[in-house]
Amino acid sequence: MNEAGRFAALTLEAVERRYGRGDITVEVLNGASLALYAGQSVALIAPSGAGKSTLLHLAGLLERPSGGEVTVAGSPTSTMTDDQRTSLRRSQIGFVYQFHHLLPEFTAVENVMTPQMIAGLNRKEARRRALELLDYLGLAPRASHRPSELSGGEQQRVAIARAVANAPALLLADEPTGNLDPETADRVFTALMALVRATGLSALIATHNPDIAARMDRRLTLRNGLLVEMA
Ligand code: ADP
Image 1 (cartoon, rainbow, N blue to C red):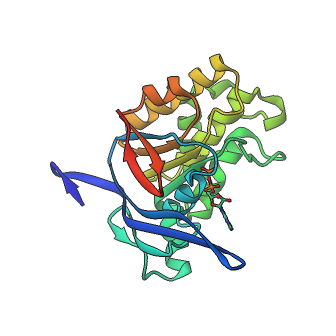
Image 2: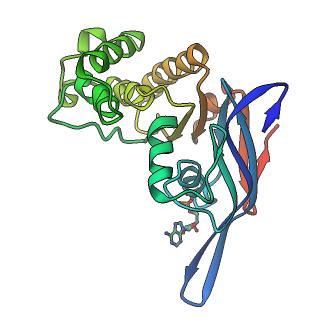
């Protein structure tokens, strides 16, 4: 999809997701649509149980919708095989979670190198890019520290560096600052937004933090299984 010639990192077209529970079917998404363009940041703000995680899982190609189409970086995914979806996910999508999920036995720089090496980059090049990203996020002096030797905010910035290490088109985040104190949350979010602006990355971020939501380009909520733009 195209708006003023801009590249859409993610489009959802009439996406549906139902879960069966015994005789009951729960309709979580009921025709959700969205176009997220390069360099845009979108906050997803909705009460617990509204379907935020479901939406992020569908956008991240971790689950398949019951209906509709999810297009990532220009590639429609509904007819793709699982292998094709995995390959697209690895090259175009980065994830940041509330808890960082860094590998405890690896240093910061090794954690950021890992996805690049899985993608086939050689060790030297992966290390160069990892150090560049850590430096950009203000973590150069921490590159050789293990996660247990880093503060919560530092760990989360390493997780952000890891998520964008493969230069994805799309960053998906589920409460990325939910586990941090307000000042640290603000610092981590500022680093994330600087990265979005510097790289043309698109970010879809589920958050309960109104200050963070206010600093993004758009705010969306989920109402009756539909994505609705907030004022
Ligand atoms: P949120 O992230 O906004 O809290 P979720 O996407 O986790 O919401 O869940 C939305 C609804 O879908 C909830 O009612 C939840 O119970 C239901 N749900 C989520 N995953 C499953 C599943 N695997 N099986 C059945 N119901 C599910």
